[in-house]
Length: 241
Image 1 (cartoon, rainbow, N blue to C red):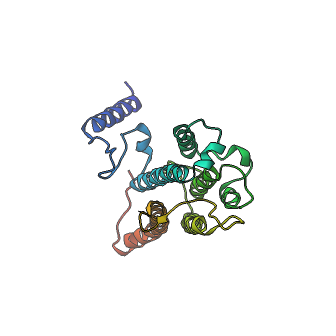
Image 2: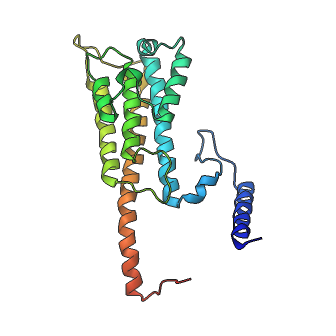
Image 3: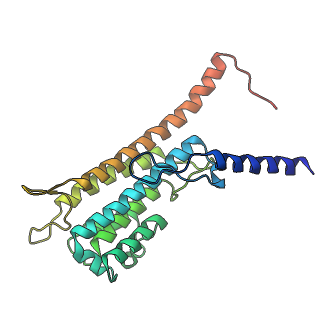
């Protein structure tokens, strides 16, 4: 057996054993959430894993926002053509995870979709347009990807801008009105009987994750230079074999 085959066999065996001893993924909302071991994780650094998990959690937040907005604005899901609320949520959730955009807004992307969704003249499914526009905007800010590997290069400025766009979208959601003065979409609710700020919480979590990734991207680039200078400072030789 060649050295190449031996090395490959050892790698596969090591990965299999790692999968056996790894703790099970946490799926409840009561603690940290991870995912099952997969072969593609061999091509991910710790930083790649961090960005991948942050993206997953942001898309999950958007899925929860979709459901909350549909429940608060039932007239919107009925525009989607779905026969039930559950069917509309399932279709919208799949679109978020697969990076699809609204069918009636074909050709538009990210902030263009958001602009249409918050236009009082738009007659389509405003919830779908708003959430899918946010999802596409977040994904495009990460180079159009939802999983990240050692070969990927992300722009910290784009991710930072995405965080600011989420803040803007959250503010417009609560402030935009129809010509008759009614909100385009019902979201947060504060009254003597009910207080519901769950929308604000989801937006805040998304902004926090995006800002963290943007800061880590800047730090990652800065550390490359610092590590090089530390090597020169302490006269560390680099390995040659």
